[in-house]
Length: 418
Image (cartoon, rainbow, N blue to C red; front, side):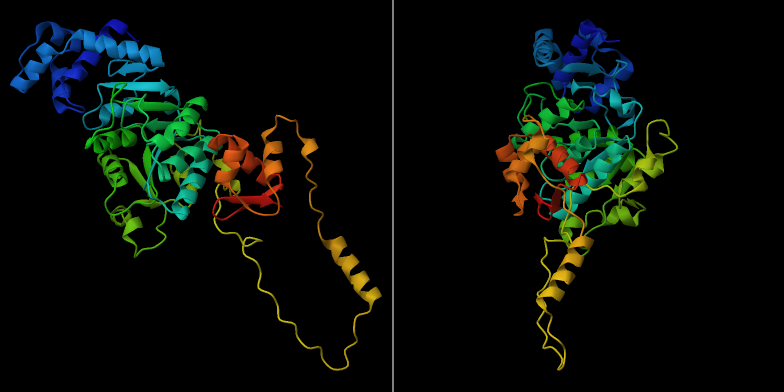
């Protein structure tokens, strides 16, 4: 149960040591934060600098953090609280305190998948990451990622478009605008019932060397890790290695080019037995017995795609056929015969769905999108700018309209009327 008075001492303790610090975990094996504050026992594993910090860091400093959290709507959860995720207790140097915006209750009963990859990811990995996370969300899973640009963003967006909550694990304080490009994404995560989690108090900017520590939390909050585009040197590898140390499964999106170092960071994991993820089914089916109450594997009875690559449609125009000379003696088509033939082909051709703006209320976002689209493809960025919709809202509307047969998704995140 949450105890504000005790929480004060837990926060004070985190301010006395670096984050993360194995010494804090050793200390908690010997005593509790309030007792240590009052007694300040010099345990053998604490050096002079440690004891100097313990005697100089004040409770007022911790109280300022708590006041800031209350103002921002950030919940402070300690290792001693019931809400603290049990899975974090079993990782290397578990966080003594986590700061949470939103709700992490979705982690208790549902399959949680950490989805990570490169910030400079190409369309193939972005599309596959978004699709798999979309499918997993529809099946009842939770996606955990790092709110970075690239694969992380598509993982979060795919999950939200599938109606699922998603957890963003930050490498800074919850109120710090980093990365700046993820500002709207973080707002959407909270508005869709997800959460932002960090072990750093408000106001803490990202600092060099912390990302590796942050990645252990991403792995710790999940049942398994899904790897997207992973270069030979990548933070995603650190997340996967942390998951392996925690005894968790690794799933990999198949590499698009085995001779390209930018996507072959998954090779060692595949050689060591990591599983391929061709769709969300490969992950959900693996955990279907464990989460039989919350996973819905029946959604995989048909293919579901949120993001698409190149189409075999109007996106790639068919080559023009060369006109062949007619054999001697062949009769020329008369006007009447051409008319009959054309009428017959028109009758066989399915009628296109009429699109009328008046079919939708003025405040319906579909009406807004229809007014912006034509037979000419439009980029999703242009649609977002002109419609005023958020990225996740726009993706949801476009997906619904595509399923209704009103619009068509083309490569390069472009859309046009059918």
